[in-house]
Length: 306
Image 1 (cartoon, helix red, strand yellow):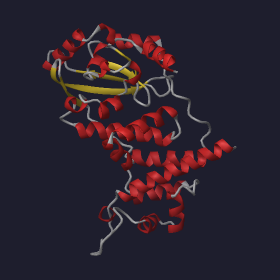
Image 2 (spheres, rainbow, N blue to C red; image 1 turned 180 degrees about the horizontal axis):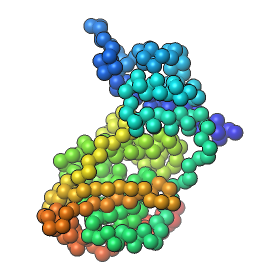
Image 3 (tube, helix red, strand yellow; image 1 turned 180 degrees about the vertical axis):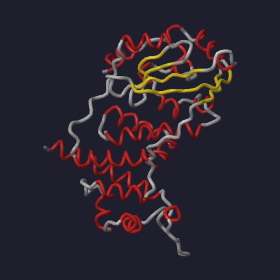
Image 4 (tube, rainbow, N blue to C red; image 1 turned 30 degrees about the horizontal axis):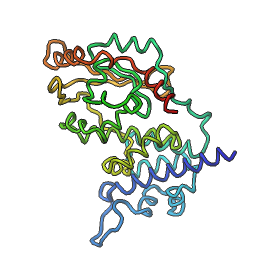
């Protein structure tokens, strides 16, 4: 019972954080309000303005934002979503946060799996020369083919247990050069994905550990984290300025894997006969052979460290 109450309080606080972030980033003119000439100390909507737009009392809204009200009705959530002009993904996230806070989910989500099944490692091999990898929900690199690791230039220099795509983006010196064409898209999408995951499981050790490290080490990450964006603007094509094979633009695809909670497969492709495909093929051919399936090595290193 105590554990459920703690989870409910945690969920209520996360719901409040999300509402606060969306409220303070919504300008009055975006929702049809006329702004007077006086100085506004609030960066976005005031609490009373949002409560009025949603048709709820200011006291009730304050309780929601402070995490003290954990059972808002679906109609209240829909009204807040309309008032804040949330898109479909943000509206869905708001509902998921409210479900978690109210504890009326039928059962907790299954714990994320870190074990990559053997046949998935074979899939990675069959995808060559396309760079491919499998990551956890916290973006740890669990398995890869040679190009899948080599594509993220110099990531192989890190120990297997430290190879995480979010950590790479914000803390590896090569990352900003690799993605210099669309750096902002990359980091915003990365933080939004982590924010959405952490919002639904705020006490999960794999997420809190990574987020805590990045908040401490990267001011840029900390600034984006406070925005509480949960929808990343994804580009289907991504340009890599790679130090070994030059510039290549690839089409990316990410998909969840069946029966492996939290794991996703990422694949990059290029049209045959193009310079991008030639560069991708060169990357696969020149990648160190040890860059292949090292998920087992990752687990061995983790056991050794623990």
